[in-house]
Amino acid sequence: MEEIIDEEIIKILQKNNLFSSLSNKQLNDLIPLIKVIDFDANKLIIYENDNPLDLYIIWKGEVEVLKKAKDGTELRISTLQSGEAIGEMGLIDNSPRSATIRTIAPTKLLVFSIADLKNLTKNTLFYNQLISKLSDVINELQFYINEQPTYLTLISNLAGTLSNRIRQTNQLTVDTLRSDLEHTKARIAMGKFMIDVLLVVVIYMYTFSVLAKLAHSHQSTSIVSIPLIIFFGIIVLFMMKNSSYPLQFYGLTLNNWRRALWEGIWLSIPLILLIVLIKWLVINLVPQFSHLTLINAVILTGNDMHPNHNLPSLIALVLAYLVFTPIQELIARGALQSSLQEFLIGPNRIWWAILMSNILFSVTHLHVSISLAIAVLIPGFFWGWLYYRHKTLIGVSISHLIVGGLAFFVFDIRSIFAF
Image (cartoon, rainbow, N blue to C red):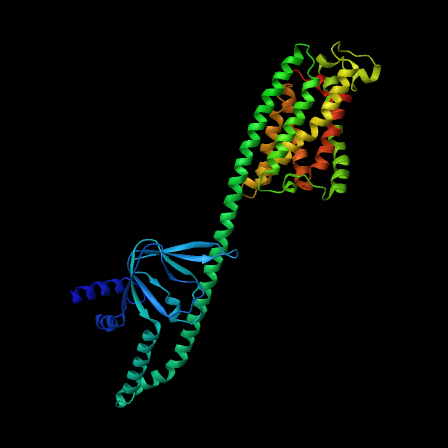
């Protein structure tokens, strides 16, 4: 029975690179040094930072290699199975164990004392010293043996270097795994937040589509619109507050507000001039719109050209716009663009985030008209870039208020929309 067990042990040792080149005689010489130990599942074999006393070969079962992160969390960096070695770095140096080993399943181990294995080396050197005293035929071998310490020193130094590099690689692996884990958790949280925001956007679009229908039927919706806009803004703020990210992440910060405010104003000027140019070209080149004036006729004449528009409704419309615009930026830029910038990967993720959030921003104008939804794409790209530049909603909200206010109330840009 013992012979059968010894044969099984030798086969296991031959599967491992440490012992695969040894002869059968050498392997048999190792048998008396081996202890066989059984472990149940989920039992610790080696603790990280322990002194290296033994070398283990897995006979049966499976173990996991665990490495502590800086916060104390243990992360699995690999698994080992039958025929693989545990704690082999202890043969090279006396550094503390670089990882913890824990069984995954019931495991049987072959255990060597590192001290016993090193004693084998001493016996071999003693044997070589005896051989060196032989006849003149062995003189060349004597020279080789005299030179050997230099080579052995180099090999020993190399082994130490490799040992340190392996330990550093293990730590780097742990840091990478930890970083990947945190990034994955963040992306999952951000994905959930984005789904919630998109749901709010859909409800928002349906709600204001109904209000637009009521407005077309000459029913006043101003008294409902403003509270609804505020309601949606509060919902989004609540979602941001309860996310795993600070409010600053969503652009709700006063950092760099002076620069954001100033650039939000003067960078809007080219956009306003573009709007004026477009309306002027349409008036002069398209006969259908030749009767229009560049500036809103109500402002020029003081007469209301639309019987459904009166001063109270106009004031309500302006107030709604003042409330509506910052909340729109909160959703489009603060919630959607910020989330997409964090969620997407790749070198062009910022531009994809701007594009996707801007398309959703455009869609929120469909309750007014398709042409308006298309028209806001251009300023939307500009505001997306402005938000990314400043990392705050202050500048982009001011720019949106200025550009949108002039476009709708002063230049009446909607008057040139054919659909």
